[in-house]
Image 1 (cartoon, rainbow, N blue to C red):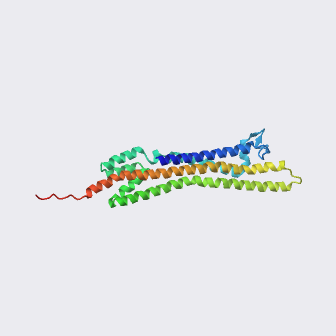
Image 2 (cartoon, one colour):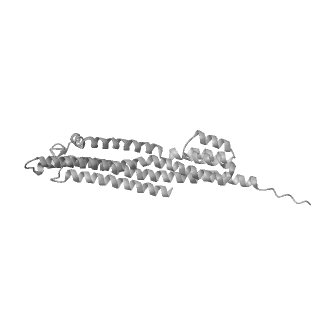
Image 3 (spheres, one colour):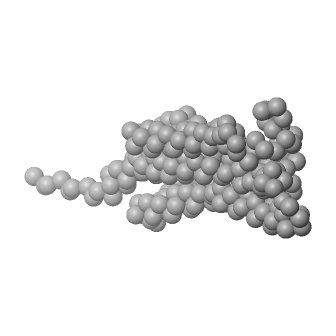
Length: 264
């Protein structure tokens, strides 16, 4: 439990750092005097940011990046609802299984696991189904199930990492394309001036901004959810082993031969 609290605090600290540097970068870009953004009257009007013009300046790449941000937020909400202790490790389920296994009601415990599917019930059910082959086989089945469930959760969380990797690349693609257009327009003019060149450059940099704004929270959330899944899987494995330990003790008692009484 202490390890989980430390990992959670570290993940939250990384998220806070990511948000801080994102906001700081945006503030510097918007407040820096004489920046290329200030030179664009479309994105900035009377010293204020025009969100509509900013979105339009991003073009198709900008809209695709915004779509990625919507998918990222949806995944975060889903992970917050599904990757939590109440969903993966219900306390009431652990109490019920403890009572049933202590009383030797293995069949009832299997039925309870099937009726309440979650991480804990999947591991315990695998152990109960393999218990007929020995306790070592049950331990191996629980270990394999825990690893399989952990891999399944990791694959689901890894989509955030994919978004975090794709978003800045999309932003860079939009920036490179915008720079190509800006230099082409610059070459066509007879006597170009920096004021004519700055608006095109500012529009080209918008897509990179969009990509970074999406990538930083996506990568931070990915690290946090991965820590949660690893901790919950480890805790579920320990809890299931503790629940199944009652069956090991029971089998030892049943397999102990009776000592014949000495004849007087």
